[in-house]
Length: 289
Length: 279
Image (cartoon, rainbow over all chains, first blue to last red; front, side, top):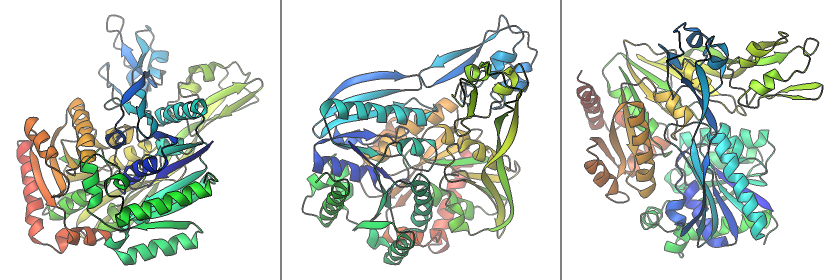
């Protein structure tokens, strides 16, 4: 079984648009949406049926029993997250470490498990989708990503699928690192802007740090051909292959508004031709063609 | 006054709005880049950096001569960051939240803490605009301690603008916590709308006043507007999708410096926010 993850560093470069199109081209894989903060893939893959919904209890919250509290202030002093003020726990700042409960002389504080989100397994016409939704203002997206990927792997084993396609989160922090576990190939989507290049450099250092083979794709490359050239030159310097350049085309937004992967909405467009080319390169690299 | 700029979805134009807003306010402005995983504001502001400070977190260090492998530390740790395997104790510093619990519970005082550098904070100026930015080291998973260090540099008397990271979880919460107002930047597409709704719920839960800026107006559909109208959310500014704005952005040029008529629209945006806050 192979895993490919689509990342970008910078948000909004087109990860989800591409993943939806890849899913449509393959139709024989398991898809995992690991952007658990702002999961959008279901808007294009349109789950027909939710087959599993489970609570995710990734973290805990300190709860003060006011009847037992003697207002000594030890908890407030010991908390490194400034989450206790005037014997009230700020549920947003509390990281559930338990130090307050430990130092409390009257055992007035307990740690309670909280629901941080939900994981789903859904049936779509492209195959099974493993996804999740973090509750509002919750943390622990790294753990949730690991869970979504674990579900995807179990489904792939069960259904004998050879490939897991992962829509990754933006950034370079814990959810991104979690999404890289057991990955055979990373496709980094960038755009020809000063931010796109800057963020590409950081995400490539990350995939290099974890020694994961990486391809680069420049989206909307004709927006700034000189920046595209700079990106291509940079990739050459660090020996990373640029596998495709997608032109700007309003048809991409149209397909999104119509809730369809662009390769289905406008199969003959220049964008779709390039996406197909990139997908076949990926499949070829993974030895699945 | 602290105004943060956020959006659930990435790439909607947070940095575009934060930078152009900061440049359009007459004076006394401080811009903070809290997107420490992928900081970009400096590319547009081009500040002269006057000071660079390392950001440290405290991670446990075990003296194996004192440790009797009683496992109290690993039983206490909620993050599985310290593990005892027979006569060996292992610290996973990337899982550690630096709460200090293991040091407290160790009956033999075998655990101390050592500083580990996970990023930097940079401070500088671009003309009279004060600038602070954070940068997480590549490979480090936890941006929040770096964000908190950036926010320690806030000068309360200034008009503070915070450029936050995308998403809706811990790095965003840490960035916008304590803000007087949050500008939510969205784009009029189904993705933009879906992620805007998540962000609206987040700022509501946090009790922060907010309004919406629609960027790339003209693309997509009208559903973002319908949603804002129904929920009575003020649309503070619309920025049209324009090839010129996109090209200027791609070169690292804040578009208000070339399209000067926009400077007034951003200073009006600032006035509107102040009015929303009764200032």
